[in-house]
Image 1 (cartoon, rainbow, N blue to C red):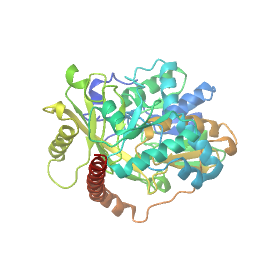
Image 2 (tube, rainbow, N blue to C red; image 1 turned 45 degrees about the vertical axis):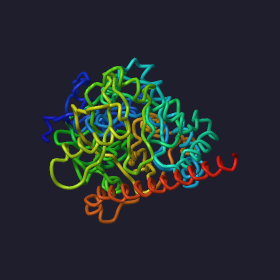
Image 3 (cartoon, one colour; image 1 turned 135 degrees about the horizontal axis):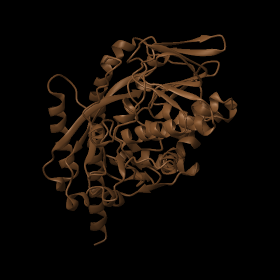
Length: 455
């Protein structure tokens, strides 16, 4: 990709979302109080909160706002992490972890509040987020999460198998839990709406200007691009899974501690009203407990937006369509024939322990990575905290559990091997289902014996 041309993925979001604001390239020598590298959700949220505090801020974006993971994801607004629960986070990070948990608890609500406050048109629906469990044994996951998040005041509720069936329109799951503050958005519309908002508040966004390097000169940070440079008192690096995609030497300590894993998204043709009312009738966002996640939500045109994973050679798009078609028809037989209008992909930034990583990069310089599939909700309050950090708020008051970078050894090799973890996830999922079948058979036998005794 050249610095003058941005090629957008053939995604549903790119097809239906109005164009973003017209942003110039960075040329010559510029200055700002705070410089942000990355025009995704984190960078845009940081800029928004800095402008609310009347701080001069400029974003340097490699492509266009929302071009990376922020504009390619499924758009589910989920106020949890993917694996670690509150107790795990606090055990790892202590008091900072407690503040982070409180931030995470409120993350979805904060996103929808920002959208409403600035009248951003992002096809937002705060209908809640549901995590059903795919085997009887994994109901313990739902019970643990409800118990832990309830302690922190989150509006979570344990769901029985019947409640899950009614909520999702399927007998495929064995219960689960849901959080009422969650929901879903058009993520590219959110990114472009945030970009227009921060520009309207007086921020600057330089697009099509990949940051090649940054350095400390005296009391200021200087970010270099192909055609110019910009200096600032403070610096925020908000590149996440794309940290090494445009310039491998930009921030190697962050780029090599996160594993960019390709995530495939897809959108069906609009479902008929009769069918739509029987599949997730309440329009909640849903992602379950499979290692190979099953997830789905509606867009504003009643397309079911879902996705999956595919390995090996051949036409990945067609193979994925076949695999996910079989899955949808198994989960919801009433869906009938399935046709996909859009299939696209992008990177998810994964860490070994599924925890995000927050870093001090030097005086008044901060960075982070490791969304682990939870960036939509997380990044909005995270931007607020980074804005507070560069304004001098004490670390003891920030919801930022700082750590030293933990780089993967042989990162390049592991990046090639990482997608094959899917084989292990599928094997574990299958084993859980076998255990589930045995559990159901045992429960049926106990019921039969009990009924005979009562005669």
